[in-house]
Image 1 (spheres, rainbow, N blue to C red):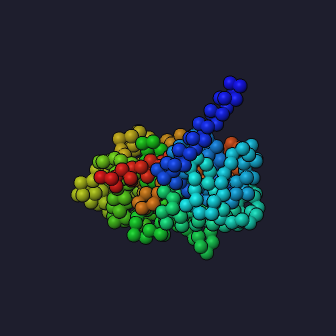
Image 2 (image 1 turned 120 degrees about the horizontal axis):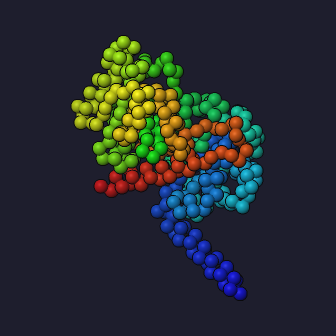
Image 3 (image 1 turned 90 degrees about the horizontal axis):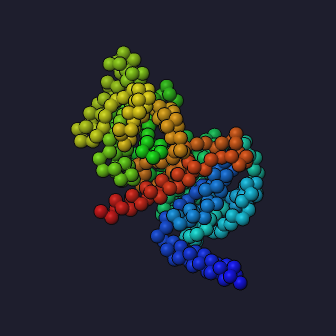
Length: 360
């Protein structure tokens, strides 16, 4: 009898809690989540993140994908008790539960660990649906699961990354790929381009624009009033006064001087090996590298707790985990969801900072 009373009381409390969350759902941010590549670890990290009911106290999730694929992975990972609500559009989303929007009702062939055209098309279809809602303001932020950059290619998607695709809707803005882990924030002037093309791409104006974007995002999105930026050189030993290349003398140093003239706290250029090897990076709020691997190698070495990829410089918020599709471990229930979970919470933090900034 006592147990029955406790059960009834607990049940009423739980129902009241759900009702309160639903009542206050407008105060909770609505976060869109894309499925990524259906043959990778996307659904596994999504499921492992959303299976903790406490997460619903922080946001309202909408997964953009294919519910039959979702159910397939739920069964494989023994999470069949995890329920979700199918909705037609983002405005139907309810707090306290997983909301799911199908990009198609068709059956999709699932082949874990294999890159296929079907998976590529499905990853784009889900992304397009989510980005459309993001641009309409129906979701507050977007967290994208990893895609295969080759299989996603089509007439509609001919970009080197999901960031590039999202950026096409905001051509007046300069995007900056920012890797974030606690106090480590690394951006890159160039990203998915051949290394031999980097010297021809970088310019004083481009670096200056990236510095401006970096400064603004640290102030607006991270709440750092007077951010300090360290700029890396391009050549070994930052060119050694032109001995190993003149990009530092002709391009990078003039861009830094330009920043200082605007009273921005920008320093460098630094040689990347000594800078990261001596832990000098801890003195700065942001680090601007010249090319992809110059940024990613130290980041993935130092960000042991799971980093986040944030597309800075846009009016919309998009984050992603700092790893790829994980074909080699797909469907094995060993993928670590930490980076994906951090991507969600970073998106929420940035949204709060932007709202706070707008209040002043």
